[in-house]
Image (cartoon, rainbow, N blue to C red; front, side, top):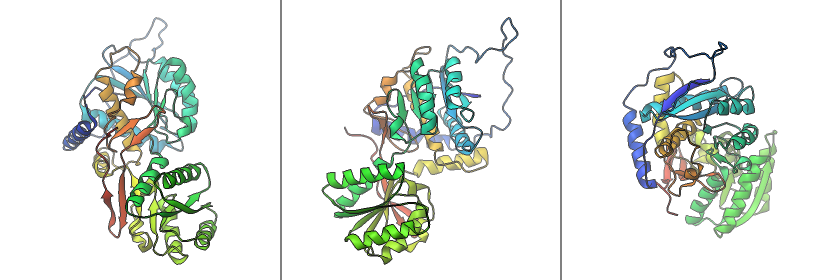
Length: 395
């Protein structure tokens, strides 16, 4: 269990808060943050009459916020990246209104949540996976503590749980709308079997229909040898299409693109999802050049990544930005949050939303983060932005 402190920073309308967040973040980047490898020893803690040290020390001037992430075990690398990014965010905000305490979920997310609530935390940031959210949600609900999770599984959202994770539905909808705006009308899709594929495929079908396009074919595949090739052959045998969604990671897109070009999709525009955003070598495959995909912006994330390397000596996981942005959100809400009172959950659904490393976002009544996404095009040099993300929300 580790503790950090931060405070608040007021931001108003969405366009304004995005600009201010960028300025504050970039200004903070001029300062090299020391590596927290050797933290100073905490002051002695008072024991009760039994000689047992109680939980966290009382603090009547700061809000208690818990960070629930895996610090050991299989997902420790991701958890530590998120935790380190929250530390950077606290140092960058330079405020003192919030105390954040980290709890390791590797030994059990429900137990971590119980400890966090016993310690008096009024807001939970995390956990990471949908399974962990399912374990934490009833514990948090019983205590009246909202949860802002880093998961993207919409099945666990709502009823006090808010999701910061990147939704494949929104990515698919954004790139399809962009393609329709460029005159493409006949759509096909390759979707992996499983939950991600089902959700991406469903979003694809709905958006194609809603935007006036035509779905000519949708084929599923798995990671077994030959499955992708077989699905592509079925696409080529069905009917012609001028846009094809490959709803999987960049590695699968690299494998599929040349086969698509050789099996009836020679002139089709290839489309991708937010999963492509973590791939840096897509342009090395000529068949993928010109492909479009929608994701959060990488502009400020590159700066954050550089600061992270300076501070911690390694590259962060891409999800680190969720930790950073969860702190910015907390800082904003803390401006009007009276210490010692429950977290003002209603503030999370402010129509103006919030600003962060990943751009503008806001929570719907369903607890799912709506994000302002950009469309990128794969080029020989990497990627280029062909349709920038909105700086805020208009309705």
